[in-house]
Length: 401
Image 1 (tube, rainbow, N blue to C red):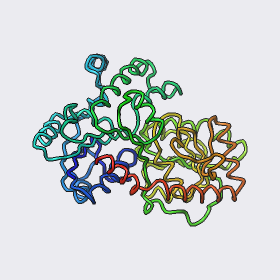
Image 2 (image 1 turned 30 degrees about the vertical axis):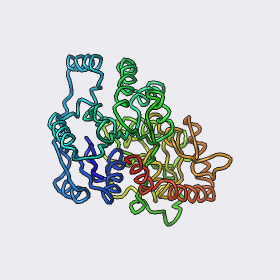
Image 3 (image 1 turned 180 degrees about the vertical axis):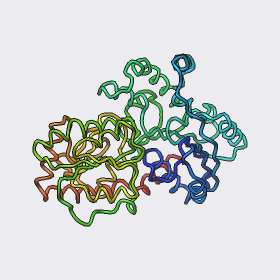
Image 4 (image 1 turned 90 degrees about the vertical axis):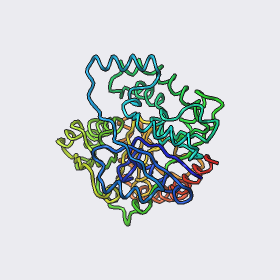
């Protein structure tokens, strides 16, 4: 097949996490079997070497400069909201929109060069025109529902601006319903998102395709390190991760110190914001910034805590910790889409909700090496069977037929 893949995020290197991991691994799988053209945007931090390396993976790489991001004035914010209200497209989508990229995509479709067009993340839906459904397969790989994420942030009190998000919520519902109707197929990562999108557009063909793990980058640990080392991983400029890092540092760790005063926390991930950096000034907390190997840090940790209170979809950080063999304690959000407990399921992680619950579950693991070993083994086996990029790629390929 001739496939055109659209990604406003430059999907290399996959070690950047988030959207890049999913997009890169799917395009890598498809490129081995089909003629794949990737059209993407290059931010200022993308190097010439990274462009050259990604070019080797695909049949054709087309790169446009990422539109400059500026902090809008109050009047500009009001104008953007008015535009959202009137036209129906969120500012977060418009901010990365490139007219030059649109012209390239329009011309490519008009020449009938491609049989399939995929949008990697819903932000790219803006480049796809509704009438294209009549001439080729159009697919949106949503990653996570923007409406569902906004609603969850309001419900959990983790919104950066609750007043703004309350105004945006009905508009995001309208937006998601509208853009879903443009596509031949829709891909989500969890059943929760599938239910949400199906409610918006009941006639849509929707597939749940989970994320995977690169087992070369996340090998299974050689031994249980013991100790009292807690780890949380993720891009530290992401709103959901910032909230989780604060929750762990400011609410969970002080309670844990009442039982284990020597327990430590490492916040591991690139681009820590000033709020996250400030957590490193507190006793027992280290903020590492970007590291060469996330797996090395996971292997040194006794427990990985994933205290997400917002953010939809399967979490790469959870899958990677499970693959590395580090026992996980996580929230329902952090463990979303994963069968980790139940009467017919071997215990693969521990659940928690309140700060007190996290402390109790962490203490269970600190005090029971056999429990750590059992969860570590069960989790790694589970991920090896259910969450490979080859399996995700095969499912994605089937959606294109």
